[in-house]
Amino acid sequence: MSTTELLLGASFEGRVLRTLQSFFRRSNDVLLRESLWATGLEMDQVDVVMSMLDDNHTVSEIMESLRQKGVFNK
Image (cartoon, rainbow, N blue to C red):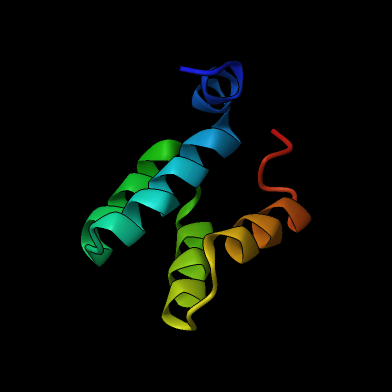
C-alpha cells in the first residue's frame, strides 16, 4: 500500500472517496447510503450525494462539491 493510500485510508475525506468509488463497482443505493452515513457524513449530506449520483455526477464532482461545502474541514 502506498503512502498516499495510507493517508487517504486514515482521513475522513479518504473514507468518503473510497465509499463513493465502491458504488461504481457494485451499485447498491441502500448500501451506499448506509456506508456514507457510517463514514461520518450527516444524513442531509448523504441525501445531497445521492441526489448528485442520480443526476449522473462523477465521484470527482461529488468530492469537489463536498470540499466546497467544507464537509472535510472537521
